[in-house]
Amino acid sequence: MQTRLKTLFVLIIITLTVPLSVNAQANSSKFMVVLDAGHGGKDPGNLGNGFIEKKIALNIILKIGAALEKLPDFKVIYTRKTDVFIELRERAAIANRADADLFVSVHCDSYTNQAHGAGTFVMSLSKSSQNLSTAKKENEVIYLEDNYEVKYSGFNPDKPESLIGISALAEENLDNSILVANIIQEKLIKLKRKNRKVKQDVFWVLHNTYMPSVLVETGFLTYKKEGVYLNSKKGQTEMAKAIKDGIVSYKKQIDGNFVDSDFIIIENKEEENAISSPEKIIPNTVFKIQIAAGSKKIEPKSYNFKGLKDVSRDKNGSLYKYFYGYTSDINKIRRMQKEAKQKGFKDAFILAYRDGKRISLQKALNSGSK
Image (tube, rainbow, N blue to C red; front, side, top):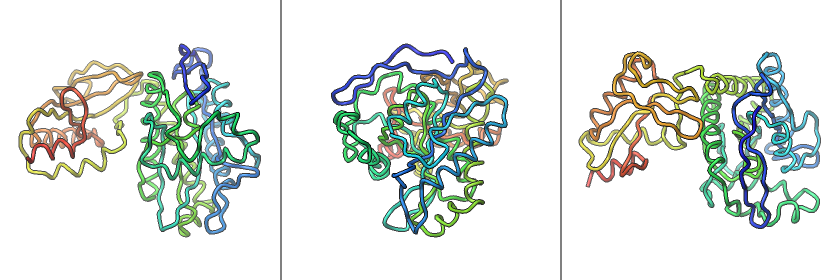
């Protein structure tokens, strides 16, 4: 796999210069996936209802790997295949040394109430985070490592905002991370798991991997019904298959096999419901429908998009995004969204822009109601 220009990552005091990898396979015809089973050895992970996270995560990872290894286009590397303790920095280093195409870390969540469901996380580029609880739990393994004060140079797991200085190339990887996260999440919720959606958070292991990376929280062991499922062979097999299928679908998309997959930006599915506001022109606002995204550059002609006219294309990092429509009329854009879905773009969703910048649909509609 060819390597990108070097980029700078700043971690409070220490500056690390490392190669960033891209999704091209110049030196190998195989798509390299690094599979990371969370926790291990002296770090059991969470023990909700007596279930053991490190064992469940490892079982799922081994099943994902076994399935991928049967496919000729994939090569699998494991951060661990047994019950051993692997430092967070070493997990990232394994992926970086391999110059991998994708890093996937599997965990089980915990909480004090009846929270349940599956969620997928990508690295946040923000200096602060809205979902600190999960990141804090997964980062706290740092405290089990010898000499962690030196190794992590001021990084405080209780304050993930201490991770700063993500570069433009990291943002490019974030696009692909969000893409694969949404594909995996779609597979997980087909198992009738509660959809905890794709979220951004500050995880050391994701911050220090220099390729598209996701962390999958398969469910909550503290929710007994879910813990029983995840601790079972059936549950582990189903979760593994869903994640494997997501990885395979992601590879097809970045290889240029154009598919009608959406590129949800974290909050879209929630905001889609906001379109129930009165239908009217929203001043100074433009609405478009995103119908697909992928690494393949396709001419925005109607014959490439099932007869849809008024298709536009925009490049974001290594991805091309394809949009349908351009209007300030909520009523019109809703009709166009329905038309796109009828044409087969089942996950088509509406985006709002003001002054050339994307804003939430809720904000757009709220401004239009004044």
